Length: 218
Length: 243
Image (cartoon, rainbow over all chains, first blue to last red; front, side, top):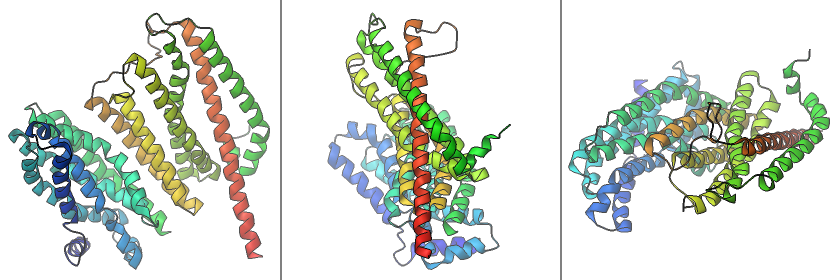
């Protein structure tokens, strides 16, 4: 399992594995929004939490089809399915690798983008916390979507149609944490709900993902 | 006593729906027409909302069926996953477009009513938002069905999507409530004492609800029959090619 994790990480970092693409997308979005809505700090400060969360969502989405597509094409996914490691564990590892290469960098870079969007100072810690708590859910849910569409040609668009509605609760609670933090309100409730979604998704969704993978490999 | 599961046999299902479908269809037309005509022409105008209140006779039944259709798909998906009856998977497939249209009717009639009453076509109210989200779930489900060629794989994958989607749809519903306190009034009908609606409205509304339920049943049965026939045709073509 460690070997699988290391392999996925190495593939992502080297040889145009797409590492950094999500980050670049996140950055571009944070540049485009002020260009679109105007540079007034007050306006930007109000929408910054939402923009950063939506940006994280889309950046995450961008790299989802890589989770299984390449392994499916060269047949290593079949080997994984027949390996002694349960497929559920392999799926979780792949989601973890996706999070380490997409979610974690997003969390780390988000304060810089918060600066660009005039995010209020009190909100930075909650931005990092909410993205840190919430992005694992995005990876796990996305892995499920990727597993659903792995066998399909032109699955990319379908993948976004399937996955984005599933992201809605995470987005609502995540952005709510940041905007409450920005207004100096208590964030316990949305943060607890966000953590609940992440915990539930991490606990249950790998089973669903492994199940649909087995169907797709049939 | 015949078991309910007998109808999992496509032959038995076709034979039964052969005579059942016309009856259900006729009943659907009669009951809905009665309910709508009764509601539109033989109820008094509301003293504040005027005649706009009468859109409730379409809005509420459609909204109710939009949710019920998803629940029916959920049950049918479970039946397919557990007992692997093909008719069940095909019924779920047939129900999705009907549910989608019901959702659209709910949203559109709501907008038409909201314009004179709330002064806006759309508000990011929890109920409206959750309905929009429900529509996205329907779209995703239908898109996944149409993207997969192999019928069994399609049935399996969409069934799992329906299960996972149900959980997230419910989560989204409560997330939307949490996110924004709304403009939409509370439940139109309630079993709690002191309900707000007079029987003059309630009776035709119940009639319309039954009518919409029958319409849904008609369309799902017809859709399932079409799917079964399409499946048979595919099998026949495949057999011809083999010979």
